[in-house]
Image (cartoon, rainbow, N blue to C red; front, side, top):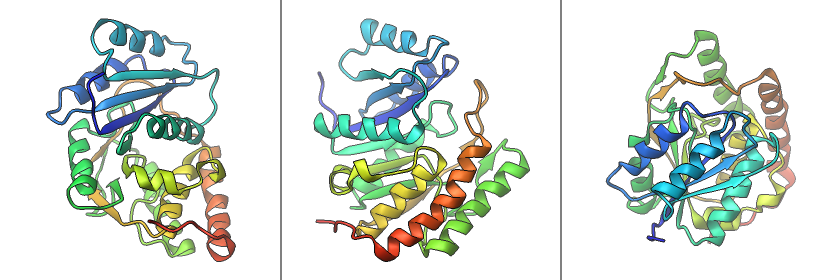
Length: 248
């Protein structure tokens, strides 16, 4: 296996239209990345496409973990974090499969951590205005005001608290008790950022443009937003009473 210090974790469920394109787009970058796909039993054959690419072209830099059934976004990333730490990666990324996160922005997140010295880099839709393309206005407003709500309740000064495009230094994921992360959906993204902040890690928001998926089906649901609404209150209570490990 050709070594890389960076791995991009991409959770998938029914992403056959996008998965090969996103993999090739990442591997076409000048910066050398590895990719870990976490597939939750996609019935559309997403995993078969990934296995074909591994067998035919990318056995040294593309990996897949297959899980039985939809077990939640948060548990997919926790699984991926642990796998990545065990395999020695220094920079661990979260990214969607549907091109809502531009592969070309991966090196910018990497630079924020590897060169500028931040512990967590967030691809932020809201740090320089509202940079969202092709989302219905109702969803833009819901997302934007959700982040405002998180800041108001928790005192956590991050503009895009629900962003799912991130780069972690490995020490962040080694410090956080990953088994104690309780949320599985939308609130997972908030909880991870909030926990990193409470641990004292340095966080940077890197402005990106978020583009709504063109192919495939969105996985968002009302239950995800409900989890986030009540989850933020629980995080605030944790912030008062819970002891967080401190950054080394």
